[in-house]
Length: 278
Image 1 (cartoon, rainbow, N blue to C red):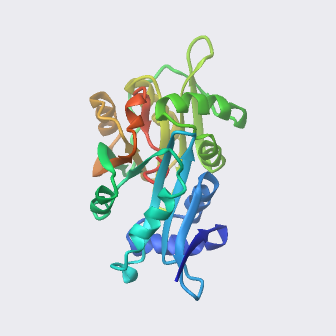
Image 2: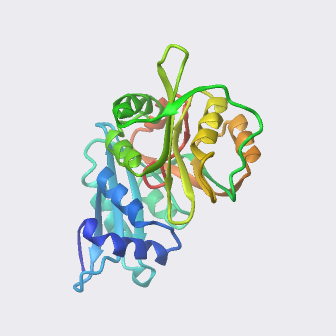
């Protein structure tokens, strides 16, 4: 088997690989990953991809590692370490973050990653709009808004994610911007359709109140269950989520190798795009 690049022609293979480990990636998810970063994997002589890992460069100082999967039939051969080492070799001087699985955390610790926070995954089946009305200046996001969105996002995420944001907008089923009374953008949110749930994220807002208002607007027209992943421990936001019918599903550690740039975030990032993308 050889370690090399993975591309769009492999997306069905990656979806099946994700199923092997109990993840619910769709072909659209894989396409978004490939538009936002670079993916590598081990390939058998038959052409089948039996592992994957992706690097997402977010500016000159920060990158994210995600979609780290090894087919269970090939566990114990050191493929996971080889994948991660390959990605780390191409990150340059950037710090690198990831959301770790319980199984993967020991490997990352051995490779110098340190836990720096926690992600809480919530599911609502279905989403229940709140009775309270959020009187906010909300409007549909347009493609022309993306550069302004990216500037706001850079302050919240502490990295340049414009390529990821473009890819997320292109597949969004709803996308909203929040402005103040003078027209300045102060928040945004996007929602995509996953293979199982609608996925609400990213959501960036000044406070939990505005974040809840963005969520309500993003989700009010759709149907079915909703997933979101939140890095915040803001009690007010978690209370809003419970009011919307969200139930905590699981928690996963955020890990960083290099300088912990996450302390430079401004507290406005309320939900992730995904655990893979950050």
